[in-house]
View 1 (cartoon, rainbow, N blue to C red):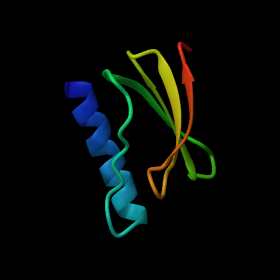
View 2 (cartoon, rainbow, N blue to C red):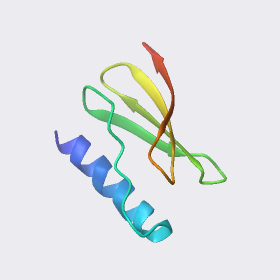
View 3 (cartoon, rainbow, N blue to C red):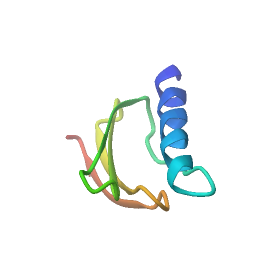
Length: 70
């Protein structure tokens, strides 16, 4: 639970610097274990203990792709 809250906080801080409203990413079924931004800052990749890798639009929070059992 702590990792999920830390992840949400970190993304909120980054998103707040770029947008008027924070962006919250929802979709993983377990703790988030990794976060990486694309060099252009437009895409966020997340990994989780649920064994999924998800790609997100950093501005809107919309999920772009999910790779299960990575």
